[in-house]
Image (cartoon, rainbow, N blue to C red):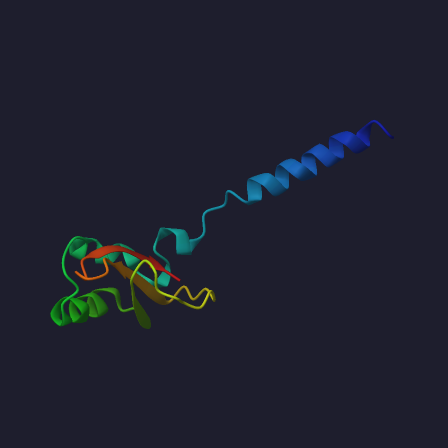
Length: 97
């Protein structure tokens, strides 16, 4: 019976490790539809572009962020985070959260 314990421990460890590899909906855009911002990557976040992004994504809330912005760490899959260059407001990335 003792020989089975290391094998059981190994199986449990392997299962836990593999469960960390599961892709969630948020990793693929989530409900904020971050992938829909792609046409605006590299463009300035003008008021018109911001309105178009809001309409295209349908995100409940949008945070317009700079790399050094201070934000809360609570995860909200319906919230869109758009990161821009400071000083130019060029859109660099978008993700849910």
